[in-house]
Amino acid sequence: MLAFGCESHVSSTLGRNSSMFSLGGGATIVENVICSVRLFQVAGVEHNNQAGREYMDKEIMGRCTDGCFPSRREFLAGIAAFGICATNRLAALDLPRWANLSGMPDRPEHQPLDFRQIASAFDSYVMDPAHGVNRQTKDGRQFFASALESSEDGGLTTYGPVAIGRELRGEGLAGLSQSLAVYFSEPDGLFLDGAGATLCEYWYLMNVTALAFGLIRLRFAKSSEWLARVESSATRLRDMAHQIRYDFSDQGYDFAKQTPFTKHDIYKQPDAVGGYSYVMLLAWELTGKDFCLAEAKAGIDHYLGFSANPWYEVPSGAMAVLAAARLNAMGYQADARKALGFVLDSKVGLMATGKWGECAVDGLMAGFRTEPAGEAYSMESMVTLPYLMPALRFRPDLAADVAKYALNAAANLRWFFPQYLPHENQSRPDLPSMVPYERLSRNEKGQSPYAGGDFAGQRSVYGGAYLMWLDKLIEAQDDPSLLRWDLTRTNFLDEDPAPTFLYYNPEASKKRIRIATTGRVRDLSTNRLLHPHRGAVEMKLLPREAIVLELSQA
Image 1 (spheres, one colour):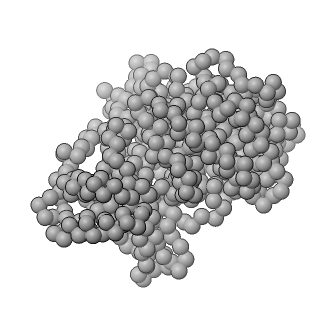
Image 2 (spheres, helix red, strand yellow):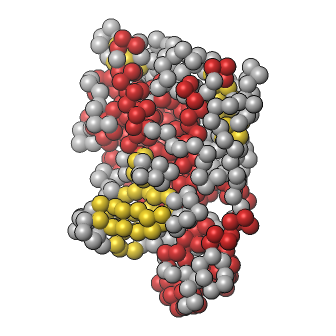
Image 3 (cartoon, one colour):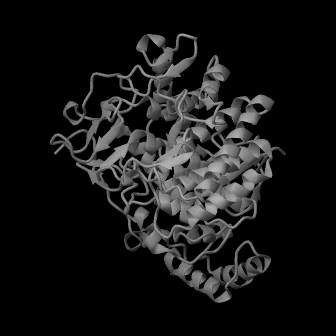
């Protein structure tokens, strides 16, 4: 048994905790919600429908005069506790889909990592040329090695997250235009992972395109030269998608031969069509070209058409959640909850739950689908959050599920860092502590868990770069488990979105939050407008409640 701070956790269940939700009148919130759900089912109405709102006010809220629900927000929080959408569309309770989260603790054993501290240390170490990660070609172009032990160009897969991380931290990279342009293939008319490359795996293709477009949004959104590259990339991707009829069930595409390729069937990547939807939607937001929006819709339709989870690599699925949520907000029918279910899926081996040895691993993500079971990767475990969080601005009804997953992930990412593991449970404890291990295995070399590497090296620069993103997503409050998540910093779809934040109370008791502002605050979870008093808005969070708040000027 390991003895290094991994305390056992107690999974909560409705049966065990229902007494905590008693709100008066001799009934629990569980009982009241069940009754209210039945009323909704009989009425067959939607909450975002005027008749539905009137029905809720008259028939449901009117039955709570005995104090069972002090406010509509508490009633809606009860609905949310059952996984029912209370903001956009009232859906039937779907226990099988969300059973993946039922065993995950509301509050993880450990506190979330201090992402500000570790991101700053990572940034400082990686940017110092003396450490051999920040490198230059003979013509002066900057690139980054993908791992501490490597000296080769890590491609746009590494350069992109480092560059965006630096942009988010307000520092940027000198020579960004020159370095990024090298990853744009002039002969093929789109961004590829390697300078001079002619073929690319599908998940890499969608990932690096999203990174390139994100950088263009942050630095070159007004540049006709860079927007022309966005349009060119979107056009080439559209032509490819039409050629393969949106069937990405191959390993990738050879642009020199203009044909898909598959070296082994285990590398087929059907979920890339979800990433395709997102990058086409981002291309539309940047260029305004109608064909991009049409392709985004076609892509998400094909992705959501899968009856079984098509997961191959989680970035594609995470992008699909954001695309579906944004299209929802535009009035297009796309089941963002189904897309989220594909990501938060432990049954297919994507999302880890429970313990490996004595360490809770809830929320950590696997690499590609056909790798051995019982492995999680640092890049995949971090990259998911910057795409899921912005989706909540468009679909706040998903907030409780995402918040619970995210809090666990923010705590359990610690196992990728050497300072949290004994030396015998890791491959290179001698390397700098701020760069995460590439892989965490349930069992390896007689230890559980065991942190090691993959391919290029043991410590992942391309994965660790997302620490700089998480630094700007996560803001600790007085209570270290009551985080404030910024839903706009990695929302590259909107040019200048209003500041929007997620708050989640993982405790069994109410928590009070205070938002300093002179403007108005809109609770997107209930569409309620809150006005500041003496420079702040104060409100209570119910047990296990998640809310999405948008700040605006007075």
